Length: 459
Image 1 (spheres, rainbow, N blue to C red):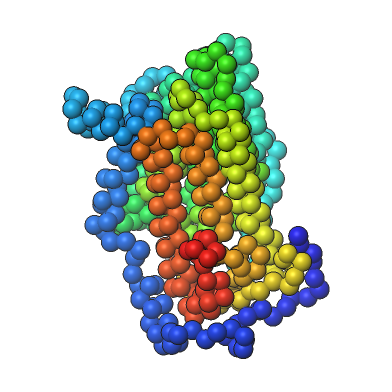
Image 2: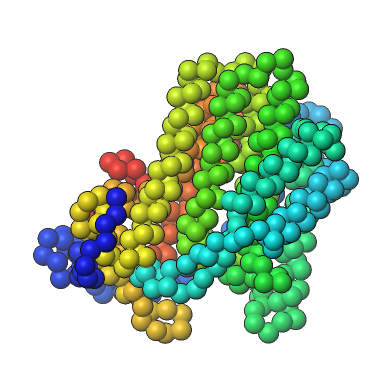
C-alpha cells in the first residue's frame, strides 16, 4: 500500500491551491473563532459536576442491568423502583475479599511482566512527522503470558475456571475505590508539589498532567493497556469457562463471540504504537474522567456484549453469528489499517504513496504552548480522504457487531454500545473544535476537501 518516493513534496493543497474551493468564512472571522475557542473550555464547571456524579451511576446501572437481568428493561426498572433498597441496588460490592485478591495478584503480575518481558521500541511522532521521543512497550507479550497463566492456574485447580466472570461485579467495585482514591492522591501530590496544581473542579475531572509517572512507569498508558485490556481478555476467557460449566454443549455463537472479542484485544496490543501515537496519549490529561473511563467504565462496556451472549439461553443462529463476527473482524482490521495509513504517512513526512497515488495533504501551521511555530500534516487521501475520523467509524462498527451478537436481549442490552456511540460523537465534536482552534483557516480548508466526519455520504 505504501511506496517511498523521492523527496518531500509540497502540500497537495494549501491556501494557494486554485482547485480548492474558497471557504465562505472570511479570514478575519476564522481568526476570531480560533481565538474564542482557545480561550474557552470545552465544558463548564456545572457540566463537569454533573459528569462527576453521572459517570459512576451510569457505570453501575449498565453493570447491574447486564449482569443481573441481561438488559431486560422492565425487570431492571421494576427492581430499582419497587425492591428495597431501590436505587442503591445498583452499587456493586466494594469490599469483596476475593475480588481484592484477584486485583492484587493481577496488578502485581502485570507490573512484573512490564519489567521483565522484552520490549519493543516505539517512535512517538509529532503531527508533522518529526521524531520526538521513544517509548518501550511489551503489551502483546504481556497479554499472551497473562492469558496463558490464567488458563494454566485454572487447569491446575488453583482457582475456579470462571473466577473472573463470577466476581466481575466485585472487581468493578474494587476498581471504583481505586479510581477515586487514585484521583485524590494525585490531587494531594499536586497540592504539595511545584509542577502542577488542581485549582477547580474542571482540573479535577480533566486533569492537569499528560504523562504522570510512578517509578518510570507511565500510569495513563499502563492502566489502559495492562489493566483495562488485560481484564477484558481474562473476562472473555473466564466467560468461556462459565458457559462450558453451565451448558452441556457450548453454543457456536458463544465461541464466535469470544473469538471476535479476543481478536479485537490482540489487535489492540499488536498495534500498541498506534495508540501511543494517538490523540488520547498526546492530548488527554490524567484526571478523574480519564481514570474512571479506563479503570471502571471501559471494562464494563467492553465486556457487556460477551456477558449477554454467555447468559443468553436462546442464541442467534450460527450462520448469522458467523456473518456478524466476520463484520467485527473486518471492522477491527480496517480500524488499524486506517490508523496505520496515517501513522506511516506522517512517519515518512508525506513522502509515501497512499493507495498507489500521491497523497493529498495540507501543511497546517500552528503555534505551540511555548510560542514556537510548528506544523502538522493533515492527510486527505485513502481512508482519510473519505472521512476525517475513519478509525472511529470502524471501531464503532466493531462494537456494533459485538452488540448484535447478543440478539435482542432487552432495551438495556444494547446500552453499552449506545453509550460508546454517544461518547464517540461527543469526542468527534471536541476533536473538531480543538483542530479549528489549533489550525484555524487551514482546518477549514481540510474540512472543505474531506467533507464527512465519520461515514462518507451520511455524516
